[in-house]
Image (cartoon, rainbow, N blue to C red; front, side):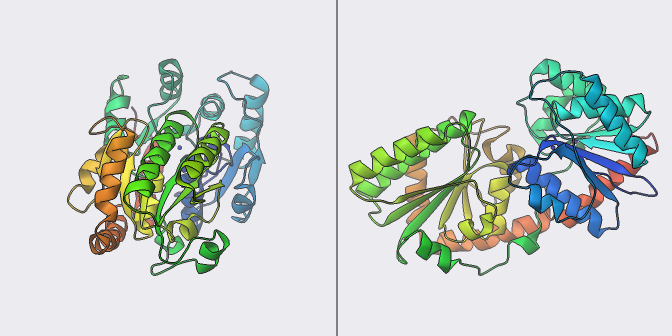
Length: 390
């Protein structure tokens, strides 16, 4: 197995008398932040002492506070700077909580926390969540890391290209208790005015960068399907970001062309399971794909890197190897590719439902957070003992 870790937020943990500080930038809704939240919950369940340091800003603040563990506000900057004042503040947290390991997930918070840890002689773990770091930044974080966790196979290869000899391959985990089976939120469906007989397709991501472009292609594909194949189609778009205004404008234009209000842009949402429950199919990548699969939904995977396609029991290892289109892909993505593959998926309701049931089994077997937290704790223990040099 290979070695890796997520984004600006800090947590403190106890492993064999160890106390670990997890770090992330802020507490917004996102794949990295949600991963850190789930990890913190699981560590606490396993009697690991957890403390958190992050910019206390974002929709997840109250959810993190419900963990009842120490949360320290650190006003992390948006760029990579060695701010001695903030490094000193993190050193104070390390001292007051008697931290023996710092676990970081992003820049610039990871850079500051890593420097503080090194100043205090404390072990460090870095989880890599993507290839979006500038080379100079990733080199600086790797230089501060005693162990590296990667959430997908391509990330292990990416990190090794920087001269790292050893990584830990541990995917993001899903807490299946948060995604109960046979769940449908009829109240939400009524609130959104989605007819009972409608076909519903959901797209979820941060509406920024490449994923905003994917959302644009997705909406145009859905327009073609609405006009020519599925007149009862309804579309859900979940997420926030600096391109949300553009997506709203496009949705308004498409609805005028189709002469129907069928696109529901709902912004950032906390209870994703309720939204997944309404969908016949989910288009997404990374953690969204795993959450949708846990919710017994068929997934059409497309991400930052490009297009993968329908995720099945037969191709799950390949899908994960690409991290569902985020860290690798089979081809470029286009409106026509999305349209044709959505048409194929949605035309066979029985197959769609069966694949959803099998998807849940895949998550239970390969991405169960209980098992993956055990693997992370092993990395902590090994690192603190000095046995996981990169």
